[in-house]
Image (cartoon, rainbow, N blue to C red; front, top):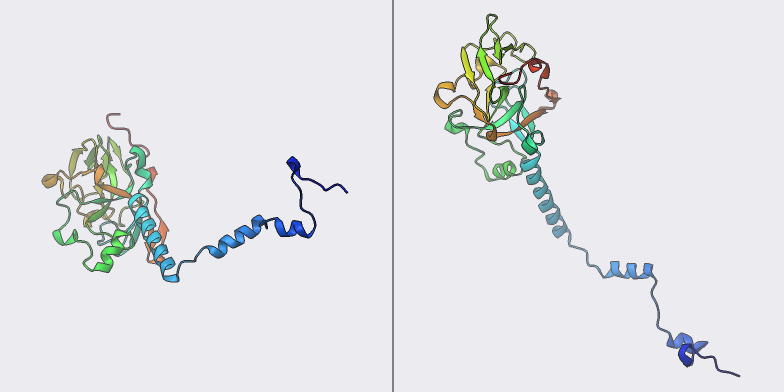
Length: 258
């Protein structure tokens, strides 16, 4: 009988000899299972630490580029905000060269001279400082006001009916002013410099805004001091609400020089 040969004339094993000489081959599924067995699982404390580091990194990233929390320390923006409200400020609207528009409620860093020294101090305890860094504790040294005029706008108070005008257009501010309050107890006539903003609180008689700082420190706020636009009251839950910028109030305002 002819002995079967393998390729290239080599003798091929058969039967029991073949089982003894051929190497074992793992299936793909078996290889994956073996790999899982060989991979060591991190101890629980290391997994927890890793998750905390990732969470902190995400929180800092969100605060730096997307959303930041602040609290309201005064009645200057009533009735929109009341003292001790917590608000969220989004920064996306002003990405890529975007800038605040008339009617926006913005949070901005003190341009100098608007706040007392004690009002610019942040939290003192270590835990609160860490929470402020990651955006879980409201930051100090900031203010919140409504944008009334942007660079180039001519703002005046008041017309014959006691209203604020912007570029000759009288503003109907009844929808957001504090009930019974008036547009301004101070008269002013000012052209906003390029790159700056004219800001006023909604509770005009209780707000030290651009009017109060006009003589000492220009009164306007540089756009680069703006942190972002307030978009929601987040606390207390009973006051949770989305915020409006009341665009109808400013719809008729012509562009500067228009």
